Length: 360
Ligand code: CP
Image (cartoon, rainbow, N blue to C red; front, side, top):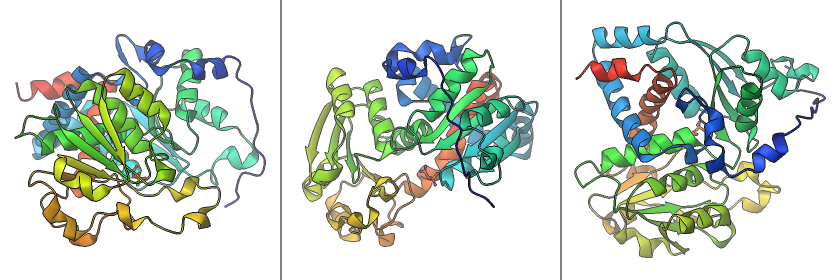
């Protein structure tokens, strides 16, 4: 297949100014009839919404256990269509969204990469999205550029096209639905020890360019007395925008490059990969920073209840020998993604009450 040869650059008046507005000041723009239409960044989620999504995800997975429940779920959104537009590589976000749509009975179209679309002829990505909006009710986007999903939602809303946009990962910026599944996994891990409130969480690795840790950090304002430990090599420290946000919301955080010293004191460890795809000179990062790897010898250093998470894919950050320890939560974490994404889609199309009523 051909690669796009020439990209058409279009000038959207007002977009640059809109993008600069602080996220918390433009939440209403992405809502319709009192609920979120577009899911673009973690600052959109409040505690009530997060608790609701976690409960809904659990209800959906319970319903899906029986043939009758699964059939009922698959009738809920059988009148809706979704487009998956993934122009940056993905395994679990793509597959979990695809299956979440299937669970709810939606019809799916997909483009993975640009080599089979009219972008090869130079069509802009904005026109491409607008074309999808002619055919579907929901567009899920994975894109290498920060802000691209927000731009398309802005564009469709400007034109009164009520098609929902979900950001399935936007460059090194945000991955809000990953943050949802991370919270769901943490809440389930802590269900017998009081939930998220008061917990100490270490985030480890490439915090500078890891969009998952950025989106998850934003969610911490919704929980009481959480403490974050940012454990990273000097070159990959958490960016100042996140640290300013945490300071503004009085969320305690500490920064260190001494992983071993943090291990005994935390309730969860969130490992991340060095994001080499964003390096200008990838060969300069041939190292994988072994001081920021979790090895089987570390299992004896962490508390008995400590959950080990990773958004995956992993490289060398977690030894495979750790996988069978009950505290290794990362495979559960990726399964949780499908259920909470189904919950999110049910919410967008106001189908959640039928699911809650099933068990009331
Ligand atoms: N966690 C995550 O976003 O994985 P993929 O890149 O495989 O979708």
